[in-house]
Amino acid sequence: MTDPVAGSQGRVREFVVEADGGSRGNPGPAGYGAVVLDPATGESLVEAAEYLGVVTNNVAEYRGLLAGLRAARELDPDAVVHVRMDSKLVVEQMSGRWKIKHPDMKPLAAEAARVFPPGRVTYEWIPRASNKHADRLANEAMDAGARGETWSPSGSTAELDTGGAAGRTARGGRTGRPTAAPAGAAEGAGVAAGAVPGTGARDAAAPRAAVDPGTGDGPAGTPTGVAGRADAVTSAGSAGTRGAAAGRAAGGGRSGDEPAVAPAGTEGGGGGKAAPATGGAVAGEHLGQAARTGADVRAAKAVASPGWGPPDMGAPATFVLLRHGETPLTPQKRFSGSGGSDPSLSSVGREQAERVAASLARRGTIEAVVASPLARTRETAGVVAARLGLEVAVDEGLRETDFGAWEGLTFGEVRDRYPEDLDAWLASPDAEPTGGGESFAATGVRVAAARDRLVAAYAGRTVLLVSHVTPIKTFLRLALGAPPESLFRMELSAASLSAVAYYADGGASVRLFNETSHLR
Image (cartoon, rainbow, N blue to C red):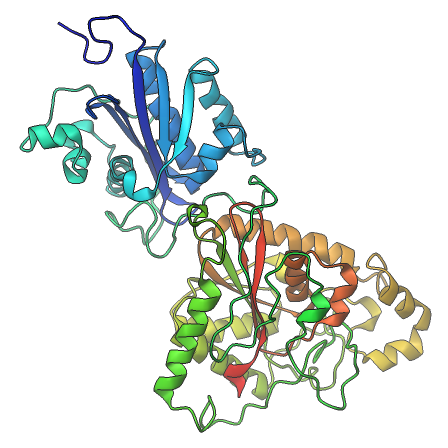
């Protein structure tokens, strides 16, 4: 019998491997799919799929690659292989053009590189629409896992569903080609609540990002996005440009009685006054409800748009940054950090929370809510989450700076009592407030760690982070590559919205700054 790949001339075999992986939640219930194809005929020679339990998209993609390479090696260890995947990350990393820094992916990439000798495997990125067979296998594996079963090649319809070559010739049944069973199906692996079989490797609530973001695994210089601007959005016009001075992004106006430089972290603080919440029409009397809803939707689309990055980069992780509503200390412009009285919202602050909740509900883009552990942020987040039908997760990294002995004091009172300490604090990010508070440098390290952790957990999703003046300004400063002194040059109003998108190449784009239209 003539070998269907090598033929009668004994030439070196060639295989095409198409692989994919996905996670419904990222991390969440995940699976991979892989198929080995005859490049001449398009016939499927081997299929492989496996449910992995709870892992990230990128881990699932690498596991799919490994399964495909191993299946090809089982057919012929001396073959040459051309891998086709819709994961830009995996293709660029395995081709040696992107560095691999994430600890979960390094060993998987090293293992994949050892399956065949160097030089016998090449990689090509393809659009997701061209990778339907592997994608369908991954979904079959996840569906099986959701049922508490192991994926079975005998029950797979992936090739028929996606119109593969063998499917076109068989139509009514399976061909006799071999299949690869899972190398170690996750027995008894838990399925996250809410996983819906058959919704796709990246369901609508959690589109796949091309990288476990925050690790710098992609090239540093890939262009990302520019600041989005749409109706009813106050956006820093050049905020999406990396390295732009954060001081130019002061989007909220100051009233005449506010100092030109408001101390970061003071309640009221570092921020222009939001228009008082008075009830009645929330968008201005000249706008009807339908017009306002349309404006909110357009604004949300502008903030969530991909920007100028390559279309194969995947959806960015977008953080919508909400400063909590007013507390009794806010109009008094007092330092209010992690070490003080932990005030709750005032009646004005609760009204502000209701207004921002209504606005975000109209926009319809928020998929998760994460809050600082302090009372004012948890209360604000609770109002919004209840309106959106979401739960509130708490992250310690989002808490406000600890201002030590300055807690509860105004800027003027600190100037009178601790002039030397205040001067040092204004001059250096390493200086601590009197009494062993937290320096801005320490806050920056904490916020950066929270950013990396949250971007990895919510890759490709739009998440509301309810936090405070200093952490939100720090998110913006880090995204812009601005110096620490920029913290004193940004206005941030109570209950204001800002937004930053994080891309697969490690870049960030400020999409919105100090928006308060929902309060007017």
